Each structure stands twice: as structure tokens, then as C-alpha cells.
Length: 584
Ligand SMILES: Nc1ncnc2c1ncn2[C@@H]1O[C@H](COP(=O)(O)OP(=O)(O)OP(=O)(O)O)[C@@H](O)[C@H]1O
Image (cartoon, rainbow, N blue to C red; front, side, top):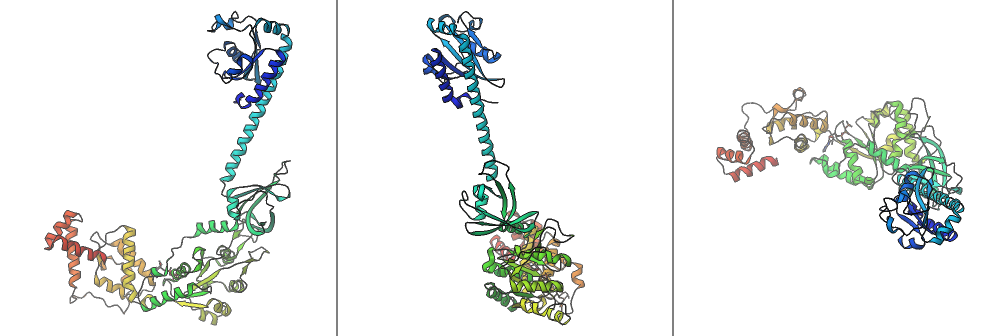
């Protein structure tokens, strides 16, 4: 161990003074590196001095640990190599090692500098030795105590640093639940700048979720729900009776949300389409976004129901809160209830034994999007109705009633009214949900949107797939515009993605880039524009030739110059035309 006599220098000096007073002889104390830690009389001025170039006797003591009395300095064999041997002022010297266990941490030197002092020491040598030995023991005990104090302090500093860097909140409490210490995370999660000295009440709610217990914490007259554990401390110190390691339930919600939110969300302005139906839809989104009323979005599969729901959220005051989507058709019936409302540890067999937070709770203050609501089992519809009426939820297996403030947006591609007739959907729930109905037309009933959507998806996928795109042939665009689009915008998007993948390096999308399946689904409405009498617009011909020249000469500056020459136009005109092509 590394004992440092300088860390207790004041005390060592006091002991040196005591020895000097009692013995009437000068005293010095050196550490194991041969620095003078304390000194009296002749040595008082030279404290802190490095003595490693002299101190031959001390070096010997450090090596052997023996107690040494030198009665004739200069003549002792230990003095033979000493440079001051010929003019040594000392008349006698007693050296006593200071030891902690077997480690030598320093030396006490009792040094006579005249005959009287020499006589004094010689007369009382045995007594002095016992006395210095006792003092060496005291100094060693002090050094040990200091070392232990320092290591305790460094353990505390390490623990403090660990606690401060913990993501969880940590509160250390003393008698009467008075907080002795709290880390930064605790203060942040509780929204309190100082926690030390405050009294905290911690009440177990009885619910166990994610393998931890839920508590209601009351501090500063505030009620905060947390998940964590309280650990009693078996110490006698009344300042440290228990430790609470926790996370605010809101933080858990945010963490869970961050982990699961993978949705692509849009603002209303990013909804593509200029048809009257789409313009009306966008206007309605802006109108309903500000309200808290429930919205029911209807439309065929792939028309953009989820996209509309996210747009309502992003245009609403809840945009900074969560948007939690649940697909009622994708979750097995038996699990849907627990997915929506959560459950506590041991709630039912077959469940994850740890307990779990439900989507309603997760969406608190935000929006829950219940997609495919028509697929919700009838018994759950009754529960959902109750939640919508009472604005509270109860986790499965728990007695706690939790108030929630959630806006509900539901969506379906089913005919709910027909389902009410066949008793598959509750009428009362339908009216609760259908406060604001938004219906999205199928793509084939708003064909004006197709060209815009196609161009939008082409740009998107060319960028995503890193492909060079020049233009889409008019006849191909006409094919797309006249297609049935049973799968609506999703099908169009997938078709365009396929086409961009199939596009050759010439950057042209044409019939050849369409899939075979596309032609299998040709509707009777389609006007196929492929007979030999068809006139190709001049613009298209021009673009095609530009593209051909580029593919021959290459897309470099030199290639473009050659392309312009071969087309019989100036380089400036070539660039202008090329820009027109790329803008398309
Ligand atoms: N007007 C639009 N502008 C841009 N993208 C759109 C538009 N309409 C739909 N999309 C895109 O089409 C795809 C399908 O949309 P979405 O998933 O919202 O449809 P949905 O009606 O919820 O489908 P489902 O009923 O199958 O759940 C998404 O990638 C969406 O971004």
C-alpha cells in the first residue's frame, strides 16, 4: 500500500516536537523516499528536503527494517561511503523505522550534535528507544487511519460517480424517509431541482410490470408514478436506511415508444394528389386535427388511411405526444386485450410472466390509432366502448383504475354498417367512433392523382435505389392511369418501385419495366395505346433522342458535348433540354 507521511505532516511534526522536548535532542522524520517530513532544532529549517543523496544510515534501515544506534558517527561501517563523513557534525544517532504491518513507511531519527546530547542519549538509551518506538507506532497508526479514510473517500467518490451516471433515478433515504441523496436522473424524472432533505412517501400500487414494482411517490405535494425497487440498507447510520432505484413511468413509456415506433409519418402537405377528392381530404384533415373527437377513417386497403391518421396527429396539438398504432387484425384475438390495456405480473397463464404496459397507457396524452377496427372481437368492442365512455383503463389482473387522455382514431376497410346488421360490430361503438367520419376514395375514382403520385414515387425510388432516371414514356403513363388499382396507392407505389428496379441504364421507364402481373390485371377500362397508328408526341421523341445520345457518348462533360454535336444543337440548348427532361 502506498502510505504517504506527507498527508499527515502536521501530526508527524507534532510527534517530532514531543520527542525533541522529552529527549532534549534534535529529531527528524523522513519518509520512505527519503524526504524530510518533519524536523526540530537544526533540521527545522530543512523540512521537505530531499535527502536521498545522503542519509546512508536511513537507506540501510529502509532495506533491513532494523533499529539502529550509531554511537560513533563517521566510524561506523554504514558511514564509509558518506561524502560528509570527514566533516560529520553528528555525535550520536538513533534511527527507528516506522512500520505499518511489515511495511516500512518512514524513519524517526534522533540526532545528537554535541557531547552533552551524546551523553544524554547514552545515559537514557533504553528509555529513549522505547519512547521513540511508541511514537513510531502512533505515527504508523495515524498513517493507516489516513489511508483508510482516503480509500473510503475514493470508494464514496466512485459510487457517487456511478450513481450520477445511472440512467435510472436513485434516491437514498434516511430515517423518516428523508432523502439524503438523489442523483441527477432522479431530479430530472421527478421534475425537482433539489431532493436532499425532502420527505418522500412511497406507496406500492400492487402492480408488477416489466418485472418491477409500481409505486406512487408523493414528494413536494406531487404524485408521481414510478417503476422500481426499494432496497433496505443494513447500516446503523440513520442517514442511510433504504435506497430506491426507479424510472418515472412516463420515461418508461417514452423508452418503449422509441423502441417500437417505426411508422412513416407525414404532414397534410405531403399527401400527394390534386383531385377534388384529395384536396377535400386535406382540407378536412386540417379542420379535424384541432379537435379531440374520435375519427373513423374508411377506405379500401392501401388508400392511405394510416397516412391520414398520422397527418391528423402531426397537424394536431398532440404532435409532440405519442402516436401509437395497433393493428387489430394483426394481433391474435387472445392477445389483443392485453396489448391494448396491459397486464400485471401473474395476470393470466400464457402471458409474459413479467407484466406489460398496454398501448392505451403508452399513448396517454397522445393518439391511439386502431387500424382494422372491424377485426376487433365483439367482447373487446364492449371493453373499448367502456374505455371511450369512462376515459379510464384497468390493466388485466390489476385493481388500479388509471385515467387516460387519449384521442382515438380508428380505421377500417370493412363495411361496418353491414357488420352491425349481422351483429359482428356493435352499433353503440360504431356511433362512438364515427364522430368524425373521413372516407378516402379508391384510386380508380380519382385518376387525376395517378400521374402526380407516379412521378412522386419515381423520384422517391430513383433516389432510394440510386438510379439515373430521365423520363417515363407517355404510353406507359397512360397505362398506369387507366389501370384498375385494386390495391390502390400501395399497389401503385409497389408497381413504381418494381419499374425503377427494372429500369435500364438509359433512365427510361416504359412498358418493358412493368411486371407481367400488371398486365394480368388489365381492366376493361384500359385504353391500350400500342397500335401502329399511334402518334408519338414530338417532345417525347426529342427526349428519347437526347437520352440515346447520352447512352452512346456517356454522361460526362465531354460526352454531353459530343451528344450536342450529334443532335445538331448547341451545348447550351442541350443542357436546357436535359434540365427539362430531368425535371419531369
Ligand atoms: N396521397 C398519398 N400521397 C403519398 N403517399 C400515399 C398517399 N396515399 C397512400 N400513400 C402511400 O401508400 C402506402 C399505403 O398507405 P397506407 O398504409 O396509409 O394505406 P391504408 O389504407 O392504411 O392501408 P391498409 O388498409 O392496408 O392498412 C403508404 O406507403 C403511403 O405512404
